[in-house]
Image 1 (cartoon, rainbow, N blue to C red):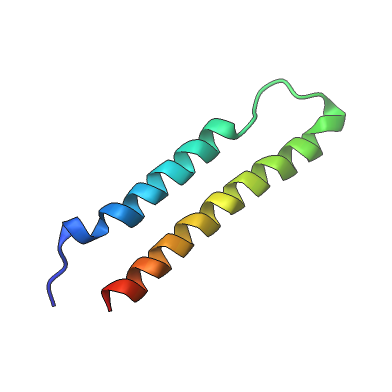
Image 2 (cartoon, rainbow, N blue to C red; image 1 turned 90 degrees about the horizontal axis):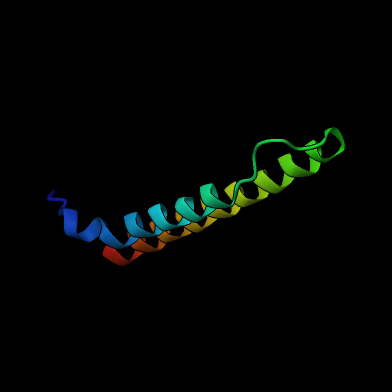
Amino acid sequence: MSVELGNWVLPLGVTIVAFGFAIGSVKAGDVPQYGRTVNFLFNLLIMALATIATLSSWLAWALVIR
């Protein structure tokens, strides 16, 4: 079984872009006490969407190369 790095370019690129945007969108810093829960949920949603996008691209890649 031979695995070529060239086959990994698309899903790896999607992973880098998705988490790059997610990390760039995560809000941190001075958040008022009442906003910390909302801030936490917003950050959790962003990271969950990035994870879903990444896993979907890896799943599609795995199905295509079969």
